[in-house]
Length: 376
Image 1 (cartoon, rainbow, N blue to C red):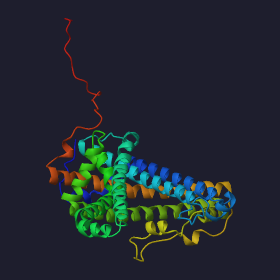
Image 2: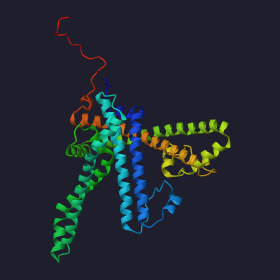
Image 3: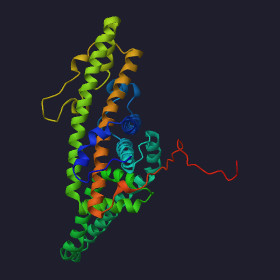
Image 4: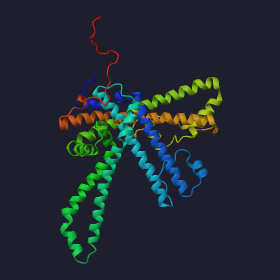
């Protein structure tokens, strides 16, 4: 039975509870992990291409080379930026995976699984890429026209006159539109995956049309819903992170009761391998940035050695952190999916919740009764 969706701000407020679903968190976490691995691979490749030895990279950065490096070769910078771009794409895909589950719940399909969401996301990845590419190509084309206009000004006397005459129309008007397109392109990293998740067919043009329609007709409502979803995601993730923190403390205490000091050294070594003082970790372990209310793992990262067991334990801790980020993305995608359903209702008088689910699931447990044609 479908739950009624309140077509107002209450739909967004329900995001933390609706996002606390294993399939949403799993689907979002898978794409976040993929994005991290792609970034890691391309960053290592860029450093190796720039002539840095693998041993030095591993000793200095380990599994977390999280920074934009000052490369000597421009090709190395391009390689790393490609990794950053792929990581951002995976963030968009994680939003898409969480959003499609939310839309299917609104349509009444509560059996839409994480595997279904991942399969749907793989199918819609070309649509999302073409949407991003279309925005980029358009901005590149306008930039090319600007370069041509700049070359015209090099003409003696007449060049400067042409710039003065045609600056407002069409140069300034065109560039205002281009700046707006650039702003929409940045927002599309978050909004376009939600729109693509709501589409039942692979249509790039319709997705871009809805993107611009939302930004032109309902920008205040969208950014209000985005801000609310982000705040709710931050608070809910902090609560889950605190639960994980206390669970780690309890597990360390219980295990060390029988395992002795070896467990403490194992935990210390595992935490020592992780960037526990990084801004991302501090962002998760504090309630809000700038507010001195939170917890830290600082005293856990001292002592121990780099054994295989400690390395595997560090990987486990890192996966738990990815799950926390997956829950954060799940809250944001759920809030934006509900918010987009409200916006479509307000903007187009269209009810996404009244659509049929993507997958038809017949009730085989209670098949229809058929009369016997033959006389018994």
